[in-house]
Every structure is written in structure tokens, then in C-alpha cells.
Length: 242
Image 1 (cartoon, one colour):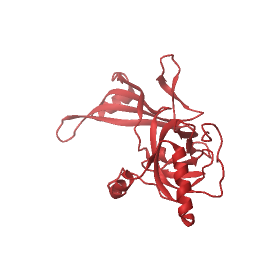
Image 2 (image 1 turned 120 degrees about the horizontal axis):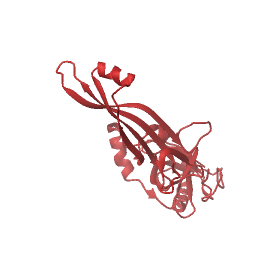
Image 3 (image 1 turned 90 degrees about the vertical axis):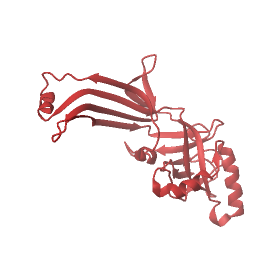
Image 4 (image 1 turned 45 degrees about the horizontal axis):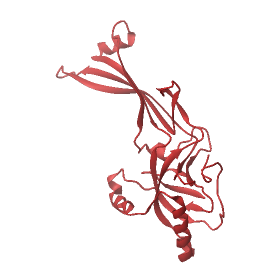
């Protein structure tokens, strides 16, 4: 029961709860760009499901009324993010000292600097992204709280990212954010920057995540797949595991 839709830009996965078969028939949709404003208005009027059993009922009815089309429905599915295997943070810690865990992980190192403008001689503040690392749970899903689940990502090769992760159009929560003042004395790197009119003020390390339990919404078009009579995929949560 594959699902292909938009996560404000379109994650991939499998609708996986008993008795439902859905397949992708549409393109990814989103709100982020001006080019999608018209489509965004359309999306705001589509039905939103928080109980996936109701979607099953409506898909069956749509398929019965229009068998040739497969009963295509453009829908929004809202649920909480979950995964059996999560990503550990390198720096972020819980109160018990164990690593924070995430569905999606984004770590950055930034240098905060002041640089001298050649023509005016004025000093301006700026920041430089010098390192970045991202990671994602290889399989994760949305759960509706009543046993239903939708597989949103199932990596088939190492390091494969979901469409949602590639688009990056989601709000990340801070797991770690620390600024260290720079020592501009005795460092070859600092001396080099100073000669070029740049002073490093400090280094900021950040880790931002999508933690398990975060409420997320996926948007896409689904149809009733008459060739599928039960679940696709494996795991718990009503067949939406990974």
C-alpha cells in the first residue's frame, strides 16, 4: 500500500494499516514557493485525517463510486512521528545523561566573525557555516493514536533520505546550542584571518532535531488499490512499523 505525497514538499512511504491499500498517483505538493500559492489554496480545503480508519472508509466509498479512477482522494494525514530505530545526538543530552534521540538530526558548526570592509574600513558582523551533519531514521512512520500508522520513509540503501529531509521544509527543535568564545591569540588560523581583516568572535555548535512524538502532517493523493487486501510492510502500530 504505497503512499507518495507531499510533506510540504513530499515524503515517500507506505500506508500500512489492516485492510487498506493505497498507491501513489500524484505529484508532490507544497506551500513553500510563490509558484505554489494557487495549489496551496486548494490544499487548505482538502480533508484532513487524524484517524486513518476514516480514510479507509472514504477510500472504499470513492473506489466503489468511481472504479475506473480507483477512487483517488487528495488528503492530509496528521499523526505523531515514530520509529523503532532512532538517531542519537552527539552533544544533546537528556536529564539522565543519555543522548537525545531523533527521527531527523541536523548538526551545524558556525564561526561568528567580524570583518573589515575594505573601502570604508567599517567592521561588520557575520557568520560562516563551516561544518554540517545530518542523519535520519532509516524507517519512520506517522501514528494516529488508535493503532493506525503510515510509513513515511523506508530507506532501501544506506544513507538514503526521505523527500521531506531533502526538502528541509520542516521546523526543527533545538537539542543543543552552545557558543564558545574564540581564543584569537597564538592560533595560525586566527593569525591568518586577522591578516585578512577577519576576527573570529566564537564558535557555535548546534543540534536540531525532529524528536519522536512530534505531530507532523503529510499531504498527497491516494487511491484504493484493489490488488492489495491487507497490509504492506512490517512492524507494529497497526502495520505501519519499520
